[in-house]
Amino acid sequence: MEPLRAPTAAENRLLTDRFGRVHDYLRISLTDRCNLRCVYCMPAEGMQFMENGKHLTFDEIEAVVRVAAKLGVRRLRLTGGEPLVRPHVEQLVARLAAIPGIEDIALTTNAIFLAPKAEALKQAGITRINISLDSMRQYRFAQITRGGDISKVLAGLEAAFRVGFHPIKLNVVLMKGFNDDEVDDFLRLSMEREIHIRFIEYMPIGHDDDGWRNRYLPLDYVKERCLALGLTPQPEAAVFGNGPAEYFRLPGAKGTFGLIHPVSDHFCERCNRLRLTADGNLKPCLFWQDEFNVRNYIGDEQALADLFFRALDIKPETHEMAKVLFGERLSHQPTERRMSQIGG
Ligand code: SAM
Ligand code: SF4
Image 1 (cartoon, helix red, strand yellow):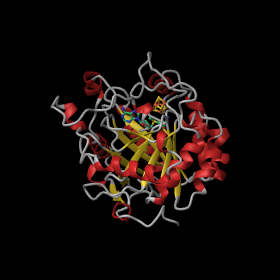
Image 2: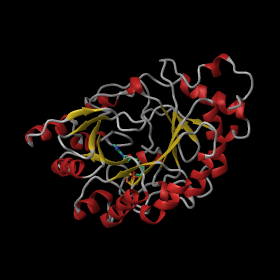
Image 3: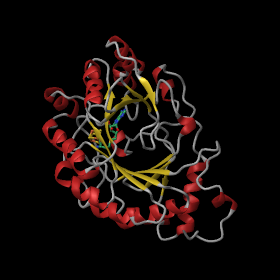
Image 4: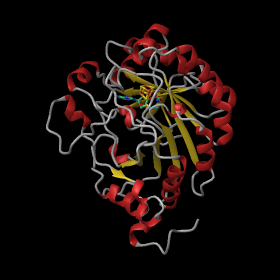
């Protein structure tokens, strides 16, 4: 691959930050809009969405990814909001897949629109898929998503198997007193199908603290449920991906389960990711406020590359979400964005 010009010292370090973490993974949010309203992600009312025309265009996203790839980014994840509400996502996927250096493009989706689009997305170059499903009970799924139809998600999941995405992961945000009584059901699902359940701790992103604190559940709870069921989980080599989950397999299980515990035990020392929001802001850390808008630099590859390095230069060592739990003072300003405005 051609470098932008003779590499400077900065370029030689690729996307390495002050703490030696190499960044080869970019999460791209395609929109802040969504066809669901999950309780942990968006408020019931009053959500302000970006105006039409403010989203990065496919041309702009491609331009940013071309530079990122020259700086060592190898893996992409398309997210949102709900990425599949953006028309013609498969066209963007095909363009990104053709960029030299990009080896892997994954998708995180609520799967409501997945069934009819799965084949086109696979053909375009999506390899791996994460589906968010926090409850397997229709009434509760509708409650969590404020009106979602679980049958569409399940049809999307079956389509994902049919067209051959691999691996297929299910994201389950655990909330105390809400869906923690379904841990056993999700564990059973990991036994019966080649599916990888990722239990995720509820994060205090854009939330009033008390509402979050009352629902937050540390993921040791999942291990306790395994023992209560008389099952000893075996540590499993990471299921292919970029993520921070530690994986386990129950005896005889076809799939695995993973624990993503950003609050109770953060994994910042292994962070390899940058985020690009739908309105064109590069975010070095999910939790903190700092952002760098790419829009004015598109068309100038060197200026865009410098922006990536500026974002990395201020990337903090860790996010301090646990301090929110104990009401402790934070060292930086947390983001005011909701998760749907970042992309998870
Ligand atoms: N709409 C897509 C979906 O739901 O899969 C992609 C965007 S969504 C923001 C990405 C992920 O963030 C989802 O798996 C969702 O469950 C997770 N998420 C949203 N808010 C969260 C929160 N407060 N804590 C933990 N995970 C959250
Ligand atoms: Fe939409 Fe995903 Fe947020 Fe749910 S978690 S409201 S599906 S963006």
